[in-house]
Image 1 (tube, rainbow, N blue to C red):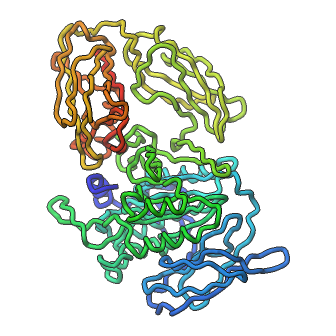
Image 2 (image 1 turned 90 degrees about the vertical axis):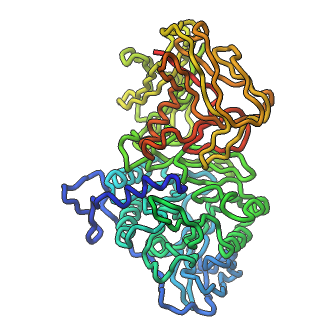
Image 3 (image 1 turned 90 degrees about the horizontal axis):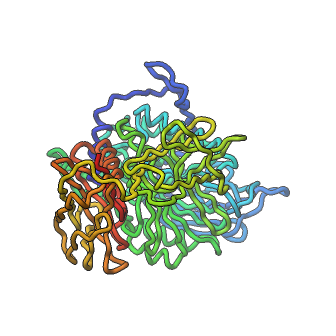
Length: 635
């Protein structure tokens, strides 16, 4: 995550005492075994030969094992991470490696599985072997997880173990897992010891190796370590990467599955060019921009992709912001989607190259007060994708959760007849969903669909039959799992219990350094309980206050904005309704502030706000969420 977010991770990484030690691949724990944490499954992986002279040329063959023996595989990409060549009709290749190269490796071609290692240390002659895959790749499932932030914190180990068990239990099984960054919870400025980096890497790979399908990983700036810092000092673009190489292999790579060419990009470099003051120290933070040598590799890798494939990238964040010429690369090579992480929220952005941020498996391992939530109130969890030809569908699954309320955000107003939907992941025989508003009377929900892995249920609610104010909806499976969500019933018929004038206040164009601030481009009417109470000035970043007469107040109050230009919008701070010195906030706003404080401390409570209207950017971040309707319930 970016610098402003690194402080709590630093405190966690440096102040916590190690809670787990590892010996011979088996977990040991002074407080007793915890069966929910998987024993570490450590494998021998190809290792860099740091002392070897890079050969002037590498040659070899890529072979396919068939029923009649071995034959050459034509058109397979072979790379050292700096240049890419394709095998000839006999499967042969020749490549002149870069002086900085560490591995020689191949791009998995669609419809084939690599036998043995897909990457190997440099040598004058290196061969690879393929075998035809025994499953069809026109339709398949894969998992996008991000921000696992594994450390020696037992909550992270239990959570990652639970993730592995859940993914292994999915039917049909996903074909692979991609992790788009921040695998570990090391400090960005490489302050952790090499031993701490080694322990965290062993924890991560030792648990992930229990997956019954391949996993592909992007490093992310919390995964780089101080290991071999003297050999690869700051200024060397390889700085911080050796532990990743030794446990997971190349940090720039691609593979193909079905009609998709997946490309993994790590844009964090420790070049000593970016200093950030933290607690009186001027720390070296990574330069988050793909360097020219790797940008050239990306262009070659894309140019060598199989004809007819389109591209999905995985990276810590939007490559349009972190890779020169990426937009041009994307236009030339049919890049259709970026799978990203870093910001710990669920978000989709329809830019020239769309991206989808996948929440965070960690949520906030380091602070239980975060209630296992991300700062946008999504549960800690992961995305599951189904690919059918060139079509991608997805849904987000909370870690350890099979039941989810999928319509209407937290704090949304209910007015009139409303259809509320929830889903049940991989329902058991005779299992269904039911709902209740009072936790006593449970009403069956109606099945309305069966998308992949889930059954969707619906209930129609008439808000006029409910009392104005906060409403807690509970949805449970008939096997007992319960999810809750608070809404606001706003029938505009119950007067405020406080008979006094009120003051509505907020700031437009608010800026956190994360989201590009934006004032409204034109005039905006401020509408409170269906009455215009004022107007916002065009192109003005300022604080506003509007008087609300007592006669206009209700128990459940609604704030909206009417933009003169349908494509206008603005960033804004949290709106507050003050009545007799008591402050009332939107329920979603109040919940986000509570979770955000758990993530980043008390000073974070006032960070950020909301994005209203239709303008883009700004993007959604942990500190700005899109919202056009705000509710104030006066108790």
